[in-house]
Length: 189
Length: 142
Image (cartoon, rainbow over all chains, first blue to last red; front, side, top):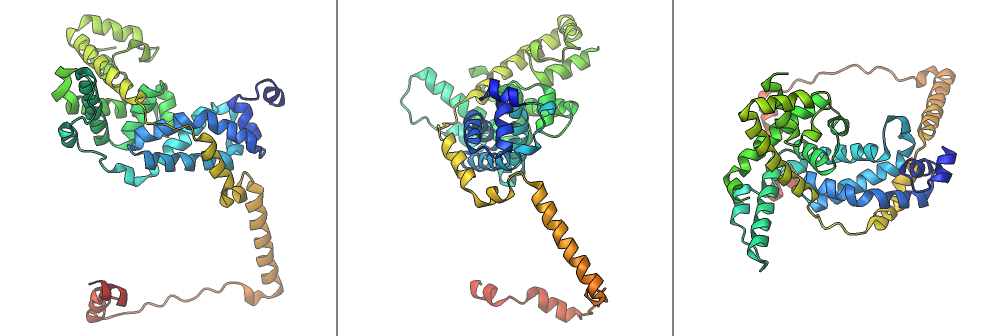
C-alpha cells in the first residue's frame, strides 16, 4: 500500500489510505475528485439541489470519519462512496415528494428566447425531469447509475443494497412507467 | 432462452446490446432477429435510452466548490471527535463497565434493582380528559 501511495499519490485508493490516517490534505484532494459527480448524481436522484448538497455533505462527512472502513479488496473508492451517497439520498424521506407535476411541466413556457429547436429540446428536457420526478428515489437512483454512470447491474445492486435480479425488475418497472408518461410527446422527439 | 426472457432483458437493460448480460447477449440477439415484436421493443427501448442518458448527463449547475465542502467537513467538531477511531468508544465503554463492576463489587446495593411494574387503572372519563384536554400551549394556539 505504501508503494502504491508513493507511485500514485492522486489515486483514490492511495488517497483514502491517507485519509484514514488523518491526512487532511489527502481528504481535500479526494473530495475534489468525487464532489462534482456526487452532486450531479444526488441532484438527479433527489430532484433538488438543496437536498443534494445536504446528502453530499453527509457523505463527505462519512468519507472523513469512516475512511478506515474502506476495504480495497471489495471494490473501488468511487463505488464505496457512491454506496454511502445513495444510501443517504434514499434515507431522505422528503425526497419522496413530487418535485414537479408532469401536467404542470407541460404548461411551463420557455422564458428564454432561443431558436425553435432549442425551445423544443428545453420543453422535452422539462417533461423528462417531470416524468423522472414521478418515479420513486430508488428507481431514479437505478436509472442514474445505470444510464448516467454506466454502472453494471452488479454495481447498481451494490449501491442499492440489493441483488442484480431485483435491480432488473426495478429498472424494467421504471422504464415502463417512464415510457407511459412520455408517450404523449414521443412523436415530437 | 425464450422470447419472454429476451423481452425482459430489453425492458430492464434497454436497447443497447452491449449493456445486456454477457452470458445472454448472443441468444437474446437471436430472439430479436427471430421476432419482429422484439425488434420493435428494442427500437423503442433505444429511443428511451437516449432520453435517459441525456437526462442523466444534464447539467445540474455544479460549482467548483469541492474545496469549500471539504473544509466544512474538516471544520465540524463532531467529525473530529468520531474520526476513524473505534478504539475510542470501545475504550470508553470498557472504562464505564469497569467502574460499574467495581461499584457493584464494593457495594452490592449499587446493583440495579428490578422495580416492580405498577399498572395504573384510569376511568373512561379520565382517559377522555387526558386525550382531549389541551395543554396551555395548545390552548393558546387554538
